[in-house]
Structures are given as C-alpha cells and as structure tokens.
Length: 297
Image 1 (spheres, rainbow, N blue to C red):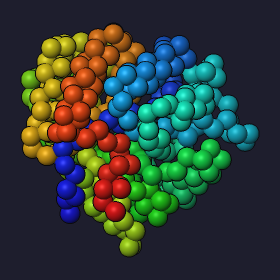
Image 2 (tube, helix red, strand yellow; image 1 turned 120 degrees about the horizontal axis):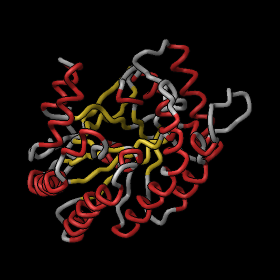
Image 3 (cartoon, rainbow, N blue to C red; image 1 turned 180 degrees about the vertical axis):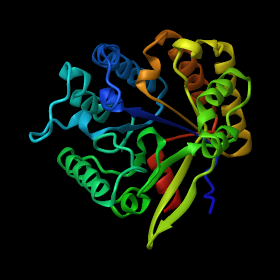
C-alpha cells in the first residue's frame, strides 16, 4: 500500500570504509579508505550544514565497533574503524538519521537464520551502547533478505532497489546491470520518483522506501557521464518531485567521491541549493529515511 509521502528529497549515504570491500581487499582500496574517507565525510557534513539538509547515514556497525573478540582486519586500522565520524554525525547541528548498514556488511540474501540474527544482535547491542536507535536500514550491496527479522528487531523503514527501468534490469537480467547503470547515468533521463510503501510481517509494520538514483563515481568508464547531464538529471528530478508530490531518493557512498571529488561536490551542491530554495518556498520537504516511518505511523 502506497503512503502519501508528498514532495520530498531524501539522501541516504552508505558509510562503510573497508568493510564494504572485506571480500575483495586490495592495497589501493585500503589506501583510499584510510586517506580519503574522513575528509569526504566531513565535507559532506559541512555541505549539509550550509544548506540545512538532514540525511540518512547508513553506517556499518564495525565502523564504530572495535570491541574485543573480533578478528583484526588487515592494513591500517583507520581504513576500517572511524568511531569519530559517527560522533561528528551525532554532534552535527543538522538532525541527521544514523541508520544501519548491518553490523559486518554481510549479505542478507545469503545468510542463514542464525547468521542474520547474530548480525542484528551485535548491531542492536552496539547501538544501545551509543544511544543510537536502529530505525532505518540499508542492505549491504542492496541484497535484500530476512526482512521479518529486521522489522521484528525494530527497523521502521528500509531502502529497496532503484525504481524505474534500471530496477527492472537488476531483477530480470542482472548480468547487464553494470552496463545499464552506466548507460542510465550517461543519458539525460530524469531519475524515477518513488513513494513509500507500507509493509507488514507477522503483525509488525515497516515502510519500504525505493531509491531513485545513485550518484555514480567518476573513475574509469564512469567519467563518460557528463557533469552537465548529471546536474540536469538531479535538478529535473527535484522539479518533478515538487510538482508531482513524490519523493526523489538519491544515494551514494563516500567512496563515490574518491575520484574528482570537486566535481562530485559541485553536482551535489547544485542539488542542495535548489532543494533548499524549494524547501524555503514551501514546495519541497527535506526528509531522512526515518521521517518516512514517522509519516506512516
């Protein structure tokens, strides 16, 4: 059942450091996670403060959990652990939502019941220590599974796949998804708008929020996506959200800013400036994922 969401911009960020690549570790990724992640996260926080844009930060639990009993990962610890970034998000004057990206960046569609329960228990205990509720959830690599366990654990809203034709490609011909994803970002096609969907599992209620588009990184063939096209896509999506009373839900990782960061931030700042103007004129809300759970209650 669709929920009347109204015109809104929602930004969700998958904050992983090297936990997002624990199964394909290489020296270059470790170096970038160690050296580039913190400046990018802080620059994102500064930009959010400049325009008063609250966002959902979906954080892998291990990023701020260095408790004894876990195997030490390879390479510099700064590539894997950054509890200070979570503190900075908590202390921001902007009311960000700190969601979960699982505890160990494990793939929920591949986990058994016991493994899924253990990951959830670890993240719930971590968040209890930090005083951070687990209201919103983003699946690692967007691999959806064990929804009933999440909802029963208290998750109120979770991100699903990109809407539109690219989502169809993911579901029906996944081997073509990487090509489709690049083609989608190269063409001046406005990203799909979305609506929150009410779901229930054994009497427990939650909200499914599809995503609209990813801010693609700018390395390799991804550089073929023209900056002017990227900006136009986002600005048109914001205009459509305001006029059609739907949601533009964009997402990315800090690692999507590793290459040509200034260009990436220029795309994001143009969108934030336009969204803030629309918000101030009363035609657009700026919402976190958790806000959609509240609107459905």
